[in-house]
Each structure stands twice: as structure tokens, then as C-alpha cells.
Length: 395
Image (tube, rainbow, N blue to C red; front, side):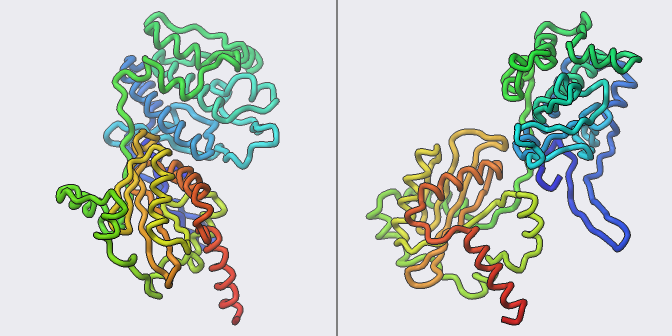
């Protein structure tokens, strides 16, 4: 849950421990279960069911992008907040991408019999976590609109045969487009079954669609947006290298010892947990011995082909993605600091957009800049660990 921060997933705030207990602080969701709505109404109208299904797919797609597969989705585990916003909860049976075996599949049989994914779970031959979750989403959509389960039988083996063959029928009040989508999700043929990306592009799904609104963390890089906005209003945004040389200060901001210590990760115990969990940072840095104007030029030359609009102000850059990602357009800010004569540190921060997409962008950026990078953030961290280990051992 520390990997997932999505408006349709119950929020994980903190974990604490005493000698005998572990305390997990979660978001307070007081609107009850989606199951209660079905139990009281019998079934939901198509527009209302679609609204919840859209939020569910948004959440699950985001989880999958983080390598998290829920595996036990059902209306009882979909909560509603005071405003009626859906929140996916209970990741007790979820798995991480690291649990996938050499065959690329998961093998733990789990879930609720009436909901379980088709042949993979039942035949114990392994299954794709993303496909299993989408199957569960299809069953949930059916339940929301029908008021009952698509697969039901008192005998467990008979139930499994129905699921294996996808033997179900949609009630007559389902619209043709809704029926077609459900049949494509609960398709017994693995090769023709619809994917989440295709669901998101489906016309029935897109009707009245509202993208999720993400909370962006406060980013303070000397109020970089204000700097660029001011330059645009003044009409003197630096574009040409000659203008850069005339307008820019003679050197980047010099970092003092205290500021250097502040960037160190070596004494932050949280990084031990984050490294183990594979969390992606919202910022990183690298050092370079290349002249600053060349660094700026190389970053610009790399970012533009990747689909970014580039704005420059002195030794700061603002890179704005043109395409919309999972959390809107990715925006990245960079700033160059002078650590020592002819040694510079370049800080790269995500200011908007998806953190995983930022990580992929930085990998592409660092690969393209390999000739000017002296040390990456990971190499800097490794040195810090060695230094701090030596200090802690009395060295």
C-alpha cells in the first residue's frame, strides 16, 4: 500500500509499532461498502454502475502499473467515502511483481469462489495477475447491474465448470454495449479476452468519464513556476545560447556544506525500507564535470525528442510533457548547483504527473547523458553508505 497513492485506493498514512502491536493508520472511509448499495437497491442503474466501474478500473490499472495485483476484488472490498467516491481496500491477498515465477505467472490459488478468474486459478497452471483482476472487475460490473452473480451453483465443482466455460447470460435490461463489454471481459478464450487498456478505450466505458484527481505534493524548487511565468510576461525568455551567456549569472548557485548534507540519504533510515520495496523517488540527482551550458544544451537535446517542451532560466529548466499520462502531463524541473570548481550537481525533480513515468523519463535521460554524467544518484548513495558505515564504526 506504500507503493500506491491513488484517489480510488484507500490511503495508507503511517505504520507504527510497540513491543507487542503493529499500528497501521489508514484513511477513514465512512460511506460503507458498495455491497450495501446492491443489497439495499437490488441493482444499480447503468449510469451509476458505470461510474463505479470507471473508478474501479482507474484504481486497478494504477495498481498494476506499480506491480501490485489485488486478486480478491468484490463489492464487499470496495468502500465509499462520504462523497460517494469508490475506494479499493483490503490488499491482504495481493501480490507484488517480485512474486511472479520464471514463467511470468502467479501460482497462489486465492480469492472468493464465485469471483475467481477463469482457467488459470482453477487449473492451477499459473495465471496472469492483471488478467485475473480484470476478470474480477467484469464479475463486479455484472453484479452491479444485475443484482446477482453471473456464476452461481451450490456445488463447487459445478460452479467451477460454469466459470471455466464462462457459462452465464446477461439479463434483458443490460444495454447492448454494456453486454458486449462484459462478454469481452468474461471471455473464456484467453487470446481474445479484452485488456484493461482496451476497456479504457471502450465507448461504453468512456461515456461520462471523469479522470481521477490526484493530490500533488508540494514541490519547492525556488518557486520555479513563478520564475518562468515572470520571464514569459517580460518577453525575455532565454532561447539562444548567446542570450544565455549575456543574461545568465557567471556561475550556478554554489552549495555550502549544510546544503550538501541536506541532500545526503545516508542517515535517512527510511531509505532502507524504500529500497527494499522498490519505491520510486520524486527527485534524483547526478554530478558532472562538464561545463554548465553544455549540460543544459544536452538535457534540452534529449528532452525534446522525448516529447517535452523546454523552458530555460539561468541554470534552471522546466520540461513540460506534451502527452497526458496516468496523472496528467508529466512536468520536470532541473537545476544546476556548483559543488566545487568544475564540479556540478544537477537536481532533477518531478513537479507534476506520475512518479513511475518520471522514473522512466529519468532512465532515458541518464542513458542519453552518459557521456557527461560523472556519477548518478545511486552511485552517490552507495558512497554515502560506505562513508557513514565507516563513521559509525569509529573510522
